[in-house]
Length: 327
Image (cartoon, rainbow, N blue to C red; front, side):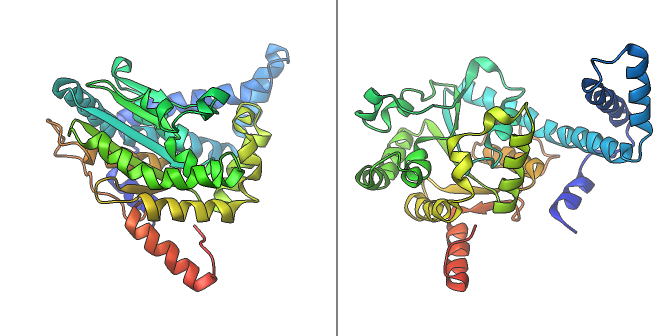
């Protein structure tokens, strides 16, 4: 039995009244989705087209997908409620929280951030996604523009890619010098430990790990979907060709910057839903907030959440077997 099956058994029963109501909403979405492609038709033809589509042999798959999306959202909601409790705890205690979402392109960072923050009080959290540094910023300390975005007391900041760009994208793509890379790797842990020195800041480092085949599938979807095409970047277009280089950069990142005080949590993200669920649980385990639900399980799924030290061992075993790092 796979991880998804185990999770489904723990989830809400599909036959509940609440689920039925949600199912109707999803079916309405399905009709709207079909309707998008018929907007230039006369009303009578549009209705006929939608009816034909709803009777087609593929409608079962479409409804299944819509229902799956509904049940997945429903499974996240109790943990999203816990994240609100965590946020309120930070506000009351004046503690700060920094969450890093790093990893390869198309590994699910952005979608996970949206689910994590969906019901939070927007006055007390920020999502930070910094673009390329300006020429002036390139002459400054690499950490400076990130430090400027750090949380105030009682605030959470979620970095959609962090200062670890200097350890992944920049050296692989040639956006920094070898000397800049070496200096960063030598300094970063010391900086992070200084963030935590006053015991008022929680730092959570998440690395989203997607397989090569799944990354390629997501890139193809971006290419072919006009609503997602904007997500394609210069790095995306080279990510598959430079897979091995990014893998080596990942290994060096973990090997050098995973410590007992600033550990990495590697999230297997081929299954987006389970990655989102386990990310929420990982964040919630970091803070001893009041009012934690006794009905929910906060235990990590070992198939999805991998301690950074274990991931290092897995990658080293891959290299001994194949001659190179794989994941």
